[in-house]
Image (cartoon, rainbow over all chains, first blue to last red; front, side, top):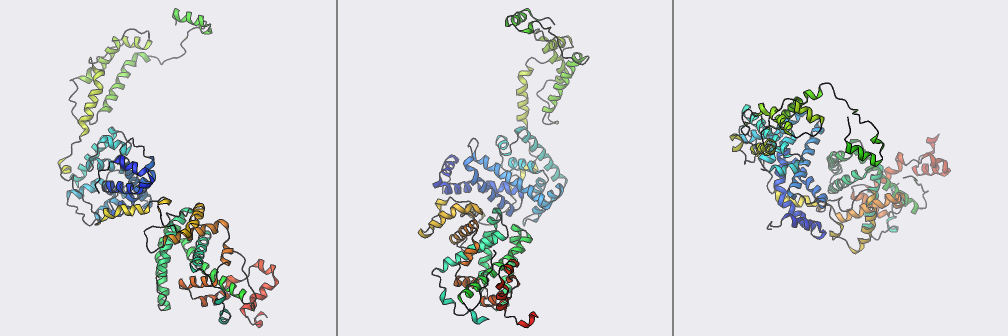
Length: 183
Length: 130
Length: 285
């Protein structure tokens, strides 16, 4: 199952009812991991990430016809994934009616509940630090630091100016550094 | 009392068992949907879960000692009580279990009425409302 | 204010009453406005330049020494060098103290800003962060990604044409039902998980369609009456019901009492009911 089909081809096949389902499956296979990890880093818990990811792909199915192809498919998918993650986090906040600071510790708790959590390891400290950031800034940081996404693309994913994103990332790095050094 | 219900079976043979079963199931869905006032969204969520509920209930072996059978069925109902509550809320889930029993009663009544009709010795008694 | 002769002539030719009207300036400015204007413009510019700086700590390396000090003067100078335009604003500005702006200041401004942007593009990652950048702490259950596409595909509403489970006999029902699915929103093809083997999806869909019909036609009672005994018995038994016991119970069930309306409608009703109960007459006394 060589994945040489480029996105244009996939979109074309999707638009044709006869080949819609196989095209959709290929799209899922092509992007599922990248999108999953992006979502997972936002919501921490695997079950939650799975829910968000599946809901997100259902949205994709329903809206792919409207995708205007003026940006990359990849960007569009990332945007939906990010929005779904942010909505999910909002819902969680409301459901447990916790205050902002409690919400931060809510995700921290989820991190610490992970089987492999090791508070002494730097990579886990980093995760704890990331959860301290407000969720939008978290998205910026994750996209840049882990996914190494160019700002131009990020500005389309997050619908924010490049300048603002750069500033946000810059501050995020500082905050995280502070957190790690001082805990 | 039991005697008056014998001998009726031969007169009412249905050619297609499956059709009858299907109709009763449809009546059940209609009854529950209407008496619980399920809206579209709730119906969409509720019926698939109910299908699982139903199939689990039916998997309980009927030959078991009576109380064991009832206990198993009760356990299943309790298990689904939670799942139904997520869709309908606690009160309406309670209603559901009540209505579920009501439907059976309706069927039994209908059965009784039918047999009385077929047995002219007994005076007919009809319920008229839905 | 005296109107320009050309303008006056033009107005006269146009036959406009404006030619006659005095050219008065109705607007007023606060006292001393123009005197302090150059200064306020300059401080505005300085504020703008300050907000453009991305990092207060970044060295201001590509700006000449004393740049900001001389900026105010430079700007006014430039304004001063603009030829007379007859505008009150620039005329009065010219009379104020002048600012100096480097020759290509405005030309280079865009480039300078962009350079500063690019300088910040690669936010320097501290070494600690660099060291863990490519470590993934999270794990997924084995086989998760392999089974994911199918799991998603199952939840997606499939187009009606793709489903090939239509049999000759049930085709009509499907067509009918399709017209009525709107009633309950019990969409034929999404209500049930296609791959759930324990539940006969096709059968369930027919049931849903029938239910929709009953609700639409409001003929529950009719349909109930049309049921055959055998079917009822089988249904009840398959649900674990002891039919005989249930029949007995139903006679004495309170809910089976005739309703008030029925009492009034039919004298016999109560008699009938009592007869069935076989309640000894003595109790009625």
